[in-house]
Image (cartoon, rainbow, N blue to C red; front, side, top):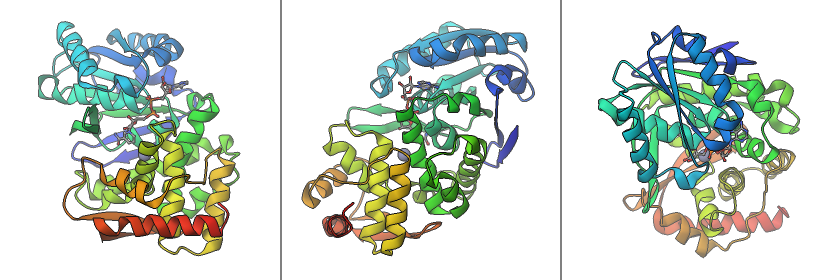
Length: 354
Ligand SMILES: NC(=O)c1ccc[n+]([C@@H]2O[C@H](COP(=O)([O-])OP(=O)(O)OC[C@H]3O[C@@H](n4cnc5c(N)ncnc54)[C@H](O)[C@@H]3O)[C@@H](O)[C@H]2O)c1
Ligand SMILES: [Zn+2]
């Protein structure tokens, strides 16, 4: 088992290793005295792992119950949150009790937000079961639900007390979910960690999954330590997301988040004039991980979709631009210039036959 310590306003450990799901209760009991615990999971994950996690917490002395909701982003809304809060309050969960988020980013974000606001803050533990949740959403303390006006618009910063990541669970993931998480892991490699990129490059990395998760979490830990509340360096984590968000929107969400981030990263690289050999290397890495490299939309439509993001404010936006594998810069541009950046990326896409 490997440990990454996160030094946020509330410090905590991220434990990464094989077989940890059956030890989640015992590991949690080392940081939270056994108490009432509610395991929150979507119906798919509850079916797969709910019993094992419940047994593990029960065995460690927690008074455990479970609450489930229908799987999918469509559940990450105020309606489900309200049901969850009523349920937690009905089960008399207090500030000395515990919420356990078992699942992907949807569960972690929503259960984490419920824990943040119930009684003005109840402790919670994350047990990520998707690669995306393991390398990205379970660490850093951002919790949220979606509003009609946009994704993640209602939320809070609330750090977990512990993150327990079982890499056996991640090894079992269906290919599409693995690819989606791989996009975020490749992002960390492009941002800071050429050795991580090397590990991911061939697409055949299940044997190195512990090392991959550790490196991604360590990167996120460092960024969060510098900028917990997202006023500066945390912007680096948006690599591929401004361009990718536009693709996700234009596809009517038929392109997954990971696929959109993959193409978005490539577009960020080409729009900034990243050397061709680096761009082609990134494209090969994405394809080897089952991710696309081609953007089928025009610059004007992309800029329109990117700028419809309700969270954007002011006349400028910050792009994250790769200069090399392992090195990126932030660049503030006027919103009116975004279409030109997309156009440059599309021209490079054509020239390099991506
Ligand atoms: N808080 C953050 O910092 C942060 C960062 C990135 C993304 N996010 C959020 O994360 C969410 C996306 O996360 P996600 O992709 O994990 O979504 P998700 O939680 O919906 O999981 C995707 C699907 O995989 C299924 N699933 C989960 N674990 C499984 C397993 N082990 N085996 C088989 N199926 C499994 C789920 O039931 C679901 O259908 C988005 O809502 C996004 O906004 C948050
Ligand atoms: Zn993302």
